[in-house]
Length: 325
Ligand code: ACO
Image (cartoon, rainbow, N blue to C red; front, side):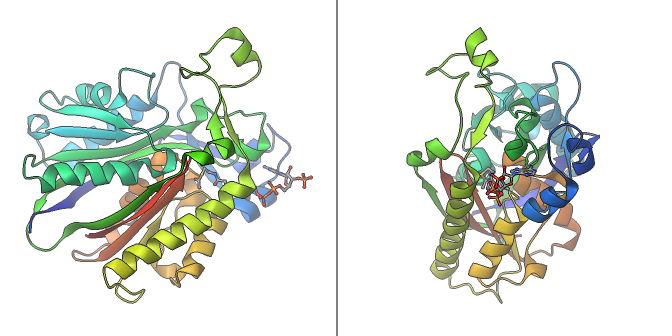
């Protein structure tokens, strides 16, 4: 059976490290509060004027091409999951692909907030499984600092900037993408959203003055929905595939909050030493968290390892995906 296997992974995070202590000089918070409530110690911030998400994506693409020894002309599709593209249009996938020297691919963005990479990976895998494409790159990238209100302590401590990219290629050796279940529920809009800047409420002087182009979140309901959504869908995917916590080697959860990760792991009965965690270093990079986890843990991954990836995010969107490394 033809499957889509991940044959390379490359991350990129900006150099600037925003620590909890530095945040405590900007808003009324503390390292102790942030660490105990979220597990986050520091996050990366992309500094510099006119530097959008494509700057990070370009670096990840260049690194991935080099690492996988791929000529840019071999790449056929580039899919970028992001909610912070350089602009509403054009998409960031094509802009970054061009900057990375890719000339013969088509690309597009996927907007599913924190579940973006999971959804995009599913789409990318379908192009391979259909037998029509042999090299598909899937990116998860967000410059969350561009839509975060650094006077709102309830959101600014959580998010950071970063991205990661994976190469998908056909495999017939049993490795690759095996199954997924994804969900969406638009009623979640009221808990996590950006008011202005879209077609419903285009940006004006008024919307800027009232800070409507920044993320707004009601943290508690999001927390609860994330825990329930991810643990239910992980259980569903494991049951569908006859998997147990013994036969799954790694759980790769979206990095939103260490308490969400711990609660989900407990609910699906996963020992924490089989759960990928790097939230302490990057915070929540939205579509970036899953590929950044794979990048960080790559040295520990063995061919044939069973991985369950799961995410929950704005929309609401959520899902889980089973692949053999
Ligand atoms: N520093 C200090 N105090 C703070 C801070 C802060 N950064 N933020 C909030 N507080 C205060 C609140 O004002 C409140 O004070 P009050 O009791 O005097 O009113 C108190 O801390 C408790 O606030 P809660 O919101 O109840 O704190 P909670 O334990 O729920 O933690 C948090 C808040 C971290 C946002 C949590 O709800 C959460 O992680 N929710 C999930 C959100 C999330 O991960 N979103 C990401 C996008 S979706 C996703 O990725 C899953």
